[in-house]
Length: 290
Image 1 (cartoon, rainbow, N blue to C red):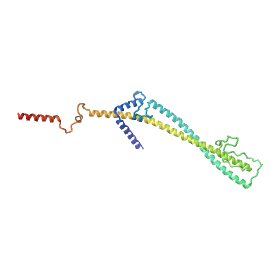
Image 2: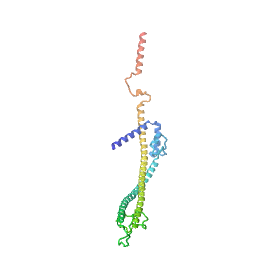
Image 3: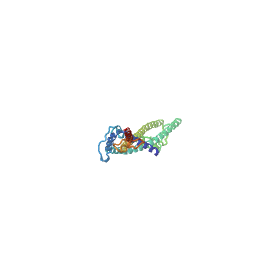
Image 4: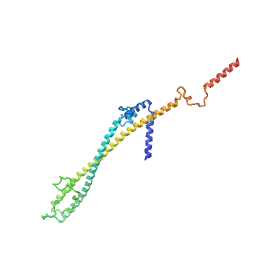
């Protein structure tokens, strides 16, 4: 993994260096001054706005380069938003997990109670249950999964302990009581559906908060990446200036000397020597004729 990251970084560095060297020297110097002022290097000021294509690419915004104070302020705001969002996400996750566990327990309890009602209905049909006026010493009205009947918590299933719904049911004393027990079952199942819907909404809230955090982290990386690109551009611009200066020094060792001579002898015959030899030979011929 480290080798891959090093390869990507080297290619990125090479690309920005090549692009910087291809810029017109005057444009590069002007852009470097703007970026340097935007980053407030050496105490420089300025808004750092740039309309050049390369300037737009190194800036974190759409076509403008942020100043150092603006970058620091933006990062601080994002960091604060991340702290709040992560705390909110933790709270949402705890609530969602609690309600999710309760939903699963209530569903199992209601399924068990539905099976018990079916068994009692079958037994009542077989025995033809008649009303029984004897008081049951341990009798109390069966608590439903909403938390204790009609006068309890107003039909809030989440207030009911899961084990209550799974409590063994006493046989009904009449067919009417059995019908009432079935009505409670239907009512409790409807309440559970609402709680499940609430849990589904909580899951959606958790997912939205996670995406918000991812977006904030992405914006933070974009700003930091833009700042790093601006700094890399300044380094590449300085290197390009050094290369150009070194090339000019190499080519211009003597400003009045032709480049071919400045590069040194290449086994060429000196023109002056040839002309001098030719002039000497012509003088000798004239002397002989005289």
